Every structure is written in structure tokens, then in C-alpha cells.
Length: 339
Image (tube, rainbow, N blue to C red; front, side, top):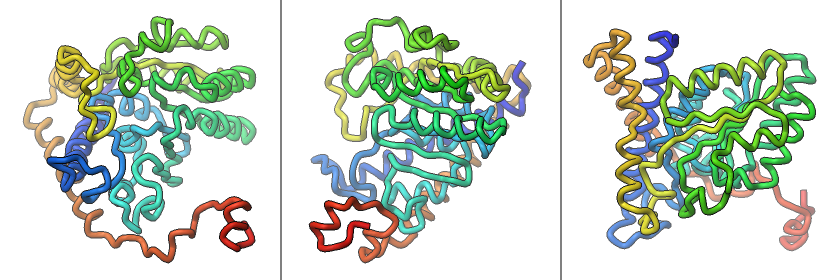
């Protein structure tokens, strides 16, 4: 049985992540309406929010330590929060401020926090190879650190995913692959792009354990992740988890979702993993006043992080080419030496 303290911690992470996405949605849409202008407002560019994915990040990361590595996809905030990424600096990065995790140069799809070994990328399935690399490094150093690669179900047909599964299997690496299945790869339903019943079946081709969690219940995710992480930490190799989550917002902010039936949107919003966990906490003796107190505290934390981030300085344009890579061709074209 999962302890009440762990359940409370997961609930804290989940309500923080949900409120964080709702507040970012408000900030993002400022100046972009009524005619949507992706370049306007305090957060320019694309923004992919993870409302409905909270149980996945909280249930898996509850088993992780700071020295464990996590790679996330382009919808990363709930995972970052559960892994313990600095909320203020992450928010400053999303707002493009100089005090952000990457000095405002990466944006929300390229968050890096070495203090807790977290990274994410906007490239589909890109996080799988680095997670395998981190797992191999842990094994060669004879530590019990593990790596976890999160990806969406739309990424499971990418070569990097299969190559990572294969290398992890061959070397019995301490890595867990977590597929977040929200039924939609941008505008494409999963049944249009793959013929397997669920992504956990992909593990069979590599002689790995494949586990499907059919509902985004935080307790069910926690229990499945516990076995997978312990297996990796004990030196028994990788696991593929496939977790059914739900998408409460469009693929990106500004997505009108014309491709998505109204009944699908309604069905997904009716499956609220946070309300389900709240009910479980009540069964453990946690009162409604306790739950309200948790929500109030997390909302204050999020509001403080956003206010702090908006008050931070913007990067100095003269530093645009610092801390970035340039190739030899671009250097030659610009008259530099390419370093």
C-alpha cells in the first residue's frame, strides 16, 4: 500500500503542475487574441502544455533521486516539477529571461537543470539516446543511479526509440522508458499510425518487460514505476512503461482542435487523475481542508514563480552567441574561425 505521505507528495506535484499550466495558458494568450499571433505576448513562440498528464510525472518521479537522470519531451513541465526542477528559474526560461535555466535561450522545450539531472527537447524521441547514455555511464561507474526517458505515443515509431531499446537491452542498462499515451499525436489518433494495441507490446521485440497502465491513476502509475525503477536500480535491466494519460488542452496553445470530436474532449476531461487521487487521499484520512491547504500553497508558489520571472531582466542581445554551438561552415560564412 502506498503511504499517505507519498500520496500527499504526489498530489502536491500534480496540483502544482495543473495550476502551472493553467497560469501559463493565461500568460501565453495575453496579446495573442482575438487574432492569434504566435509572436506576440510575454511568451512568444509555441507552448505545449501537459494538463492531464500529471499522474505520469508524479507517479514515476516519486521513485527518483537527484542523481537519477530524466529526459522529457516537448511537453515537459509536469515532469520537471515532479523531478524537482527549480520552478522560478524554469519559469524565467519560459519567459525568455536572463536568469532562466538556459539564460532565456532555450525556451520551454529546452529546459536543463543539472542540479537534478533533468533535460528535455523538442525533437521527437530525442530524449531516449541521452537517457541510455546516462544509464550506461551509471553502470560503468558502478553506481545505482537510473535514467528515465519520457516520450509520447507518437514517438514510438522513431528510429531513435528502437535503437535505444535495443542498446539498453543488449547491455542490461538501468533505464526506464515511459510512453505517455494521450491518444493523439498532434492531430493524428494512435490507431491511424500504429497497429499494436498499446506501446508496451513493443518491448517484446527486445525481450524486455512491457507494462501497460490503462488509466492515469497516480497510484497505479506509482506501483508500476516502483517495480520498473527497482528493477533498473538493482541491475536487472530496462523496462518499457506505457501509461494512458489524457489531454485537456490542444497539442499547442492556439490549436483549435478541429480534428478532434467533441465527445473525445469531454471524455478526456471527465477522467481527472487529480480528483481520483484526492478521493484516495480522503480514504487515507486526509480532509478536504487539508487538500484545500495543499492547493492554496501550491498556487501561491506558482504565482510567486511567475511574478518573479516576469520581473527578471531580458537577455543582453550582445550575448546571443555565447553558450551556443556554431559549426565551421557558419563560422566561415561569418568570417570567424568556426570555433
